[in-house]
Amino acid sequence: MDPKDKESGDRDGDILYCTHKHFDHTGGVNAFLQRNAEAVFVANEQVAKTFSKWSERTIIAQPGNTYSSGPWSFKFIECKHGLFRNINDVGVVVQIGGFSFGHPGDSTILLGFGEFELDVLAVPISGAVSTSPESAVSQISQFKTLPKTVVAMHWLFRKPEGFCQKVREELPSVRCIVPKDGELLNVD
Image (cartoon, rainbow, N blue to C red; front, side, top):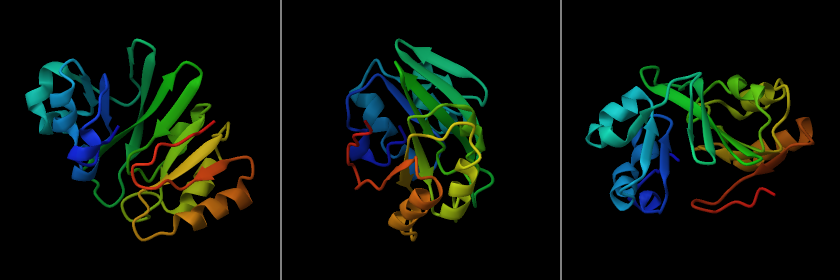
């Protein structure tokens, strides 16, 4: 999902999802699709147009729609990219078995994810191109069911540890993780 560069796209897989067309979310698309000749590329129309050479393997993600492949289910969520209003950002809730993961891309709005029982929600907290730490905590507190874990992402100049502290104070039942770049997370 959202491979930022060639290295992160150089992975084995069956499905690649991109939330929006910015280079730090699509830099590894070609590497992934070249490496995985049978993989499906799932993206919104803007991203699909950018990578039109893969059109025969592309599924268009539209808010409100779903896509399923084997045990995987993708529900597409309308999001709003911060700062760059001309960028279409389509978030996703991915479910496999009893596990669910939400990814809003660089959205300023997280409330669409509040309709789901999420095990993990990735939360962009830069405040410039996405939601701010304060807004993220405020929005998450309005969810019907709080996610079990939030993962701070896209913090740029923010302090993700401060975001996690705010989560612990205001949403004590929610675990908050600050990953290292490229780190595989254990969310059990």
